[in-house]
Length: 404
Ligand code: BTN
Image (tube, rainbow, N blue to C red; front, side, top):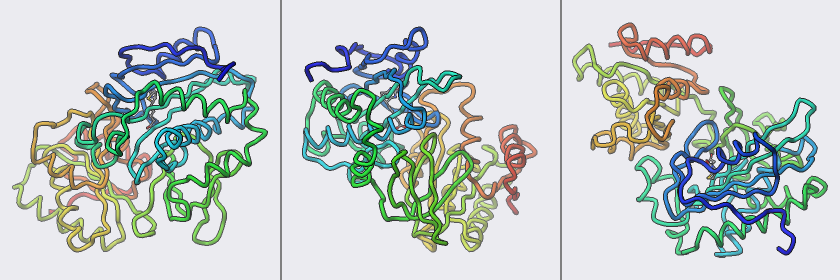
């Protein structure tokens, strides 16, 4: 583009995170039109404090904007970025990705691209700067990624395309600029959101939208001109979900999803067989009570026994879902038994890329997110479980001890 708003990208061999770098830069002095690229990231950041694994070969970049955009349209920058990436991939490969609201790109339901928009608004409600970070998995195969990510992500190389980060980044910026229209995009929101909605993943399906502890379910209709998701509730009401820190997922068999979190000791204070039988029996009766999603922490002892009990219960109740939360990526990496369980989980979430002192606490908080019950084992003797149980209590989540 002849007079692009973006100056030549600043390219690093390696950064912790291009978003972090550019935010630090903009905190000193907000400047629009900067684009920073890293060939790899050691601490790529995703939404809700999650990590974005960024090995060499992918496209990882962030760019800054400082135009005076009406505040209500700031969240729609993410919509623009998603659509720009979707169009760029189509232009370069002919592949039609789906946009998982608000900002992931999926290829055959697997994540190809993630987008993180961060910004700073002054007390007068004026945008100081927005930093939009985009990560696209280009090279390698999903099997090159950590085991817990393998079932849920994909790369362009796997889809048969070998593209350089530079050509992909250039094209995304090109598409973004067209949509952005030097900050005037909001005058054209109807067309932008119509195009976005045409490419929306799970459109017409029942989904859950999760924001903090709140979960809303309904049929996904589309996106309105403010980039908000529109859901039709089962009673026919229209629900409007603002964009922000939230995730969307399709619902299992369209049922309202009841979540049970597990917390317990690593070292069992009863014979393993007894705990195993008790948890298996409990999971079956929770399934009868309508619990569908079960969340375990991934540690030895009770966590893994609980996860196995869910896997076993699926023989009778195939709709049950297992989610395993790991405090950090390498957690228990060399234990084949755990790896086997992770392979059978519907979702594995990694709280932090590396160990840090808060990662267990954050893992415990994530366990409780949107949970309808905490099933715990012997919490009196374990610091972590005591804390999780007390946190659940404060959040009003019912507690139930494992009955042996
Ligand atoms: C997500 O999946 O939740 C969003 C991921 C965003 C990743 C990109 S990679 C470039 C930029 N730098 C970061 O640290 N994150 C974004």
